[in-house]
Every structure is written in C-alpha cells, then in structure tokens.
Image 1 (cartoon, each protein chain N blue to C red):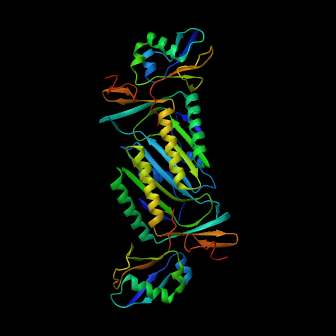
Image 2: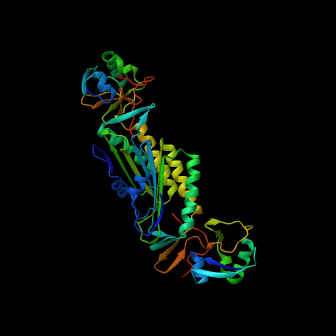
Image 3: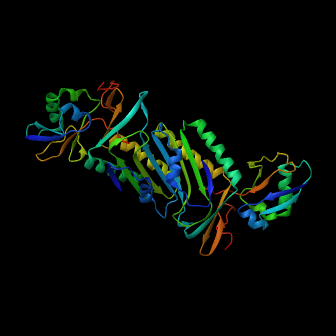
Length: 80
Length: 80
Length: 143
Length: 143
C-alpha cells in the first residue's frame, strides 16, 4: 500500500519535501515501514532518533499500519 | 532609657497603638527588653512567637539596645 | 526590583524586570487570595508590612538565592492593604540560563519570604477575623 | 487552554486562564530565546510544530499532571515561527491550593513537553544553522 508521510524539522530538509510517499506491504508494521524509509532516505538513519507517529500519537515498532493512517516522521524534538 | 517601639499585626491590636513606649535600663539586652514588654503587655506572651527587630533586622536575645535604635515587634509573619 | 505596594501588581512588569537576553527560562510565582480558609468563606484580607525591614529581608533572600543559583534577573512585588479573593498578593520572577535553576530559586525565594519577611495578614470572615498564624490553637481570635 | 500559535504569547492571558478563586498559588514557566548557543551568537530561531499531535501530546501531559497534583487551572501556549533572542517561546501556568504543588506540576509539564511534544527548532547563526538535537556529534549541520 502507498503511505503518505508528513515530514518535520530535519527530516523535511533530508527528504526535500513536506510529504513523501512510501510503498509498503499491506499489514506492514512500523518497524517494516522504517526499514523501507531508511532504504529510500539513508540519511534519516543518521539522526539521533526517529520516531514514527500514527494518527497523532507515537507508534511502537510493532504497530500495524492501515490504509488511511496519518503517518509522520518525528526527529528529535526540541520544543520549549 | 526610653524605647519607642513599633507594633504590627496582632501586637498593634493587643497594645492598642502603632507605637508604644517602654522604659528599660541603659545597656539592656533584647531579652531584658522582652521581659519588660511582657510585664507591660502580658497578652503578648501568648503569641505563637514574638521576635524583636532592631534597625530593620531580626535581633538575638543577647543583642544590646542603644538609644536611638529603631525597635519593632514582629509577631508571626504571614506574607505571600 | 523589590516593591511593597498598595496598588495592584503588574505581573508583566515583574516578568519584564526579571527577564534577560542570556536567559532561557523565567519562573514566576504568583500568590493569590483564596476564597476559603479553615472551611469558611473569606470576605477579604488585610495585608500590612513593616516596609523598610521587609525590603531589607527580601534583599537578603535574593542575595542568598543569587549565590546559590546562576540568576540573570529577578523581581519581587508584594501587595499590602485590602485584597479580595482572586487578587494577587505577591509576584516573584527569576530568570536563569536553564530552567531547573529558575524553578529552584523561585521556590526558595517564596519559601524564605513567607518565613522571614515582616508581612502580616488578617482574614476577614462573615463572623469574625483573625491574624493568620498569630496565636496557637485559636481558630478565630475576634469572634 | 492548549495553544500553538505564530503570534506573540500573551502571558497575562495564560495566567488568567490558569487562575482560580480556590487557588492560593499560580506557578508560571516562561521559555525565552537565548542570545547564545554553543558559544555562538544566535541571530534567530525557527520553531515548527506538528500541531494536531502537539496539542494531543500536551493534553496527555496535562491529564497526567492533573492526576498527580490537585490542579485548579492550567494553560499552555507555545509559539511557532521566527523568534528573536528575548522573545517568549512557551508559557505554562498552573494553579493549585498550595504552592508546592504548583511548582512541581509546572516543572513536570515543561519537562515532559520538551521530551514529548512534536516541536522543533532551528538555530540560525551568522555562519550556519542547525536543527537542535537532531544529529549526534554535529555542532552545526549546514556550515
């Protein structure tokens, strides 16, 4: 399935876009999603950390993605 | 010597005045001052605490009073 | 800035006075009049201060806080006179490069101010009034 | 009130929103832009947020704080966009009956917000720029 992925902070600079598209298998986990992501954008693997948000919440590696999920890349946060 | 003593809070209610006069010996200590004070105003002895301020600072019982010192009664404080 | 004032406290001014371009953090403590005490409705409070000594004691507290934490700015304003529930009785602001210091220093200052500053308050209830903390085991002195 | 806004933060409004007639204490944390980082002058910062998720994460933090401390009111406002040194990036206010709880809860909220809220900042220096904390052992990425 095709995921539309929001990017923020340094992940937007690395990918060069506010949203990128990534092809993963139906029923892929967040872990599998990240593997596909790092293959497409190797520089993302060099970040201090990279979390995946699904529907506005932090997702565990084991969470299964569904079509229509709002997916976002969360590089190290620095609010405040 | 005659001391002029400022009163605050409940000590003003007890003494009934913003300033009271108290006669103590030349070279009297704060401890001796308090004894004379309690004799003149016994209800002051019932307070939770009573500190004496001399020239805008808390005074120890052993501090010697001098003519012209600014003396004040400091009942339990409750600022903030 | 150390201020004892009968006028309403301008909190933004307290904050601005404490702020600094080198600071990443400002912590502000605001004391407000509660509408109840000892389970009774508070109509209003009367605050009074021994002003010259209060300023001197607060200055000592600030000096001690400045030695213990890397403060870049600070301000303390304490109101006196008649205050209704909800009104601000005290505002303290401190700034520091990092936030932990600002929290610790601000808490130290209000704790010490309450312990040392010669300021008093009388609670006025429907059925009486009481100088707060003045007498042991007396719920309301002037009932 | 949880607000992510490109406009200057109205601190008095944050405080008023958090205040309560039953509260004796309001603690306020204000984050401000420092004029230096890594020993270099900061020209300005660019803040950005994943807004819907930031609001959701801050709400979880407030819920947890409300369970741990007896809060009577609270407000969080975080600014995004371009901020110069001295400007306010975040303001958090909480009120509680007694002061210790207000300090602890406010510190908890800012600590967790910095850990969890999806908000990023880029420091702009004379000679480069850097997304804060994004990469290990990289002093400035885009020199």
